[in-house]
Image 1 (cartoon, rainbow, N blue to C red):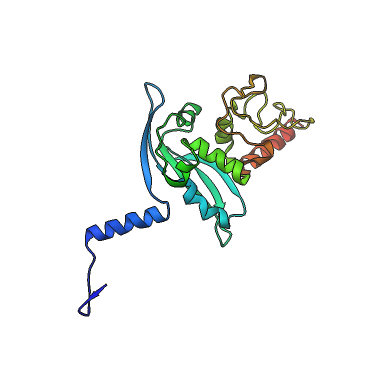
Image 2 (cartoon, helix red, strand yellow):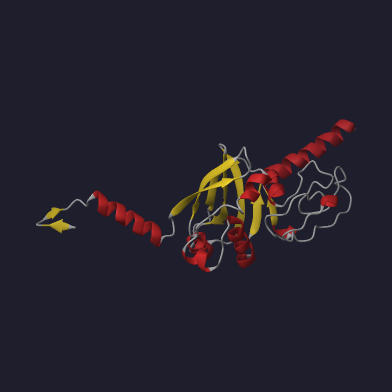
Length: 231
């Protein structure tokens, strides 16, 4: 803006108001939350308060969507992996908290009082798991992450279980035997006989579970080394 041929410097208030407006227009506004897990653990974190609007531009350009999460630097992040217009894969965090990716922590997010606004509120979504489930149902999204994260989200007891795979019913150390795929992880389904001891936080088809390749290579390499050493 020019006044008498001079460029006027905007006030700090004007800059702040413009930043708020830009954030609201692009759905990049955030909020914070606190959630008690038990007497010893309290989660504190932040989240995008209108993730559905935030993702509206993402889904137009992405060839696929993967909901997922990971923990690094003692911070757990939940969000969506997508591709941008030039084909580069990127991760968009929707919620972050200080703490581990334990089932007790992740399931406690269902009790966190998140105040979603806009398009997310209009769809009556009130938890981060409802948002991620909506993406799975609406866009046929995949579930991505390391084996620990995937197993935790699906209520599975982990890769050392009798049935170590969250997607199929192959037995421990019988990887050369025929196996069946698991049924879709219905909400509320606990199947301790097949190594599912907690209520799954997401409902996903086994064909849409995508573990990180590194863990697959490590597992295959371990089996090969075991076979070589035995022989």
